[in-house]
Image 1 (cartoon, rainbow, N blue to C red):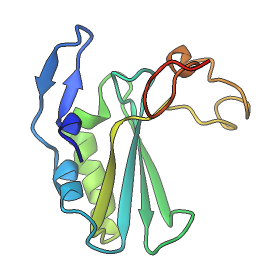
Image 2 (spheres, rainbow, N blue to C red):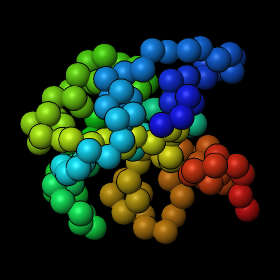
Image 3 (cartoon, helix red, strand yellow):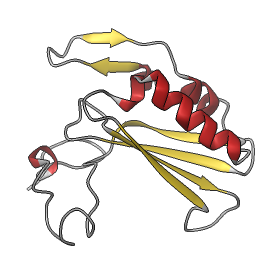
Length: 140
């Protein structure tokens, strides 16, 4: 986990330091064995995470054993204490020993093939239509 995970950018792009969440502290412990939780952040832009997808792997496998999504309509899931508590409770229920959290928002919160057609761009999130999900750089 990088220092970037403890920061958030406001619309003015002013950097504000936030204390690490319980999930960030868990992820800093490194790999402690299975079960492991992966927490991916999604949002309409790179500035606000409106969705966290939490996958639980009980053992090494290509697909998670459990998956739950957490949403915020107008806030940021990274800094919502109620959502943080729900995620912590979900991972405790499954005896998670290790966690991995993305250090940035990695794309649109809508799901291809569910919220919009396979192979198309999300019509609700034009920000991601021409951006790389991981670097946030513009692509052709």
